[in-house]
Every structure is written in C-alpha cells, then in structure tokens.
Length: 326
Image (cartoon, rainbow, N blue to C red; front, top):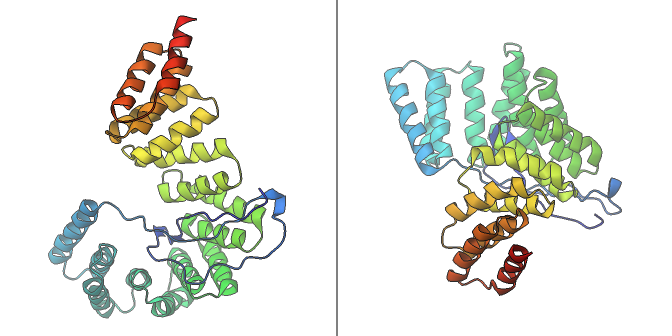
C-alpha cells in the first residue's frame, strides 16, 4: 500500500457528526508509510438524519420546550436541533436565549458550543467549551464533553498540538467517550503515528458498536489498509442501521463475493436489487452469486431481468447454461 489514498471519514464531535469540512488538512509527511499502511486525509462529511427525522425531532423539542418554559437545557437542545436542521440563525438565537436563562449551566453551555461549531463560529465555540472544561463546578462528564468539543474546534482552527492535548484531556475525564477517542485516533493517524491511531479508532468502534458513524470510519480505515474482511464486518454494522441503503448493500455484496463468501453476499445483492430497482448492476451481481451457489434457474432469471434493463449478459448466460448442463 505504498501510495497515498484519500478516504472520506466521519469526524465525531463529542459523539455527534460534524457537518463542516475541516479547513486545514492535517499535517502529512513525505516518506514511506509505516507498516505499508495507506495514509488517510480527514474530511468531515455530512451525515444528517433524513429530513423527516430532523423535522420530527425539532417539532418534538419545540413542543416540550413550550410545555417546560423554565427548562433551559431543553430549550438549548431545541436550539441545537434547529441548527442541525439547517435553521441556523433561529437555532443560535435560541441557544443564546438558553444561555442567558441559565448562565451557570455546563449542559447548556456545551450545547451552545456545539451549535456554534456547527454554524462555523468555531472560535466562539472553543471559548465557551473551555469555560466549562476549566470550571471547578463541572462534573467529570461535563469537563470531558467540553474538552472533546474544544479539541475538535481547535483542530478545525489548525492547532493540531492543542487539539491532541484537549482530546487526551477529554479521555482523562471520560475514558469511554468514543467521539473523543475516534477524533484522537484520526488525528494521531493523520500525523504519521499509524498503528497508534488505528488502535484508538478500533477502541472507539468497540465502545460504540451500534454507532454507524464510528463503524464507517473504522470500515474506511480497514479498507484503505487492505484488510477487506475486517472492513466488511464494520460495514455490516453500518448496514444494520441503513438496511434500505441499496448502494451500501451492493458494496457489501460485491465485497463478500470477492472473498468467496457467496452465502454472505446473497442477501445483500437481493436487497440491492430491491432497493435499486431499475438498475441492472444489482441483478448482474445477484445472477453471479446465484450461479456460484448452484441455483442456476434463479441465476438465469436474474440475468434475463438485467438484460431487460440494458445489460450485456450473453457471457453470463453461457456460464449459467454450461454450469447447469454439467
């Protein structure tokens, strides 16, 4: 794996996906890759929930905030939900109102900082997060969360040394903070300490087996370093939360097929054919895996369906017919 490879990764901010791209790329050094590992450049990606899901959350929190006008933390949660739903100005105004309502609340300040970070007001986010992180009144959980937010913020500002220090502080306070651990692993990996960074990312994935964003990051890591089976296992955990993602199911089908794991490939090709109806590629994959499993009649039917959608299937049909005749 001697070359450079750019891999898109989800970057976690205190357990939530960041929606903005990181301004300066992390430092890269020339020279051979340690242990033949491909280097990865971090790019945060949008991993928003479906619009209907975000809207439902906003509506629910709006109702709860109206029903509990004295609850500043609930108001702040509503403000952050507005920002996450793309209603940035309204969300920031709501977060500011919550902070005025409860100026000493660490929970409110952390939510405010997250909203500012999402809104690209990074310096303000870091300032607020660090007030909480350094406060003697903050609980270990609050301090850890605040350091995690501040760490990602200063990383966005280009200060990698301070970012690493803050993320390590977050883990001192909250050792099971998988968002901070994942970010630290990404930062360490991208500054040339590949085995150490990979180990941190794997630990984050073990702490959050049901978080698809963490699993996707680890899947990308394994994929970029040629560990196909581990990558597919991580993608399987992502697919558990996105069962109707036809592209992902297609990726899993082709990946297991390439490893000769035809029984594992089959349900993914079947799902891809259902969710990508009208496209021939899933049907071609389905026909191929059915052929390998000796289910020749079904393989022929899938191939003919692909042909109706414009695919060239003569060679595949010949292989199916030859296998069925033997």
